[in-house]
Length: 284
Ligand SMILES: Nc1ncnc2c1ncn2[C@@H]1O[C@H](COP(=O)(O)OP(=O)(O)OP(=O)(O)O)[C@@H](O)[C@H]1O
Ligand SMILES: [Mg+2]
Image 1 (tube, rainbow, N blue to C red):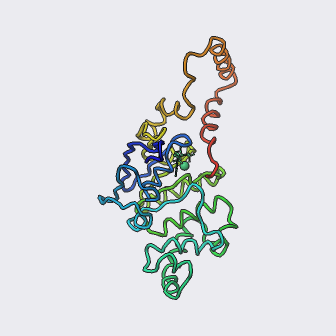
Image 2: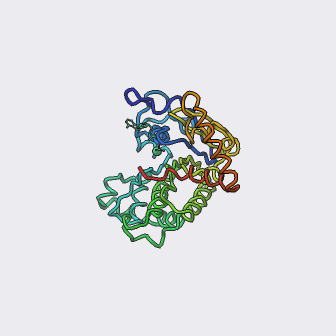
Image 3: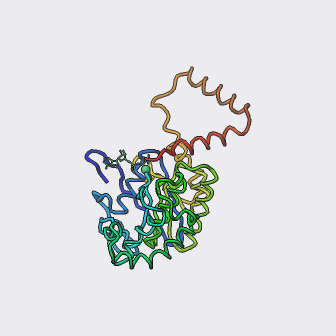
């Protein structure tokens, strides 16, 4: 995917199989969201194709959804002034005869489809733990619940593959754990999941396989264990060292700091890993 002179995603090849949870990680600006936008037809890739169940998909969002791929957005996209239930029901529009506008304008055709859809939508709200909020306006939900509502709305299109773009951004640890359980439950329903996250603990707990994007290219792909142990991944997240040799003074300074850190206790490494995993979390 090229934007003028910038190649945001370059020759990335990725397969997600039924029953799998696959992670997509990488530093800010690596091209993760752009990759999702290419998969879902929001962007028309400059080169390359997206196939689903053996069929090449046209780069049109509604056709991609119809084919069976649903997504959530890094920057939450809900109908803020509609209720929780209505948001999920609108998500069903690709699965009903009635179109999106009919759903939004609530014509007579929509009312009929509505009754059939309501039951299923409530099931989904139950599934994500928001049934008790059905009549609340989406904009009044706390942040974490808005993210779960987006997942329910995505599930309403009855996808075979769900793409999640930073589903735990802005969540507290408790909410993150709940979301982890939710993603496992989605997988157990037979839906394949491709998930972007900066929370490494979340990713490595959850994923059968992880791909790492750096500057638009796929750097590594493998099981959580393999990726976690890969030095290039650590380097990609912590940044490359300065060009050229550091001066002797700097080297001595680093050495002293390392000794000090080692003396400060064995927790240091964990703390570092944590701060790395939470540097990102701002919604975009
Ligand atoms: N529509 C666009 N026009 C021009 N450049 C774009 C566009 N969309 C994305 N980019 C650029 O592509 C690169 C990748 O951005 P992208 O949002 O995909 O990164 P990301 O990996 O999702 O980062 P983050 O972790 O911060 O969400 C960036 O340099 C971004 O500025
Ligand atoms: Mg992104």
